[in-house]
Image (cartoon, rainbow, N blue to C red; front, top):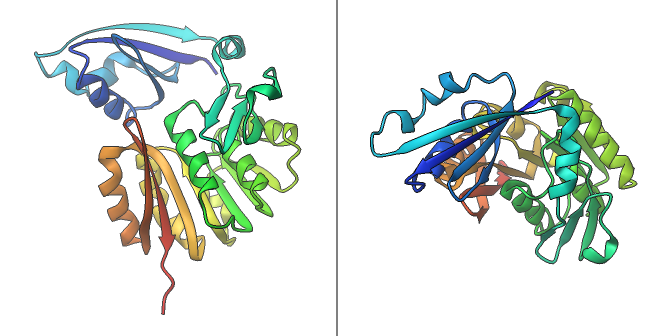
Length: 280
């Protein structure tokens, strides 16, 4: 699948870059890079840029000037670009996310090797970084873990290495499921089961920990299902939304019997740790 790279130069850049990222994340773009002049936004090559931009604030406000450039990145070129730009990611002292071509002497803490291909989750993005940190800072690692929107499988791999005895990793994209399986095998994982599909695949199984790093709208739509499949006293880790969305996410969680335990922030992104209340 080809990828659209949308380069948007903005004047002034602030606060419009943050506003635009928030809006485009709701319109089909799934990853972003901050630049000196504005942002790079990435999504499926079939996105209608003119139509989507017409729904954003920058076309409605005369105080901002902007220009756009569209580039299609062929699927077969993605690995070459990635290898040229992928540096090891250090999640504090806890872990290092490495590419297959990185040497061990670049690592500290747990070593996780990832070949992302077209999947999300190299650790470079703030949300993956925060979720990795959150896994290490759990009091204990539950035996049964669900990783929704697994992408590269990096969070599932970390969960197994921290002691999970069963990890169900699900992604709606077939290439992500294949990539997660590849990375699971490359990291000698034994307890990870990878499936392609959505939350409906879970059926009647229950988990002590559910991980979901997707986007706000999908998370909100799935919250009731996450709560239903979470054991009493179980933990739900969510990310894929901005700091400005935390109150909304916590309110939705409370409606489903989940209470906020901890929050994480990195740049403009946030992650939250929720606990399923035990009924008396």
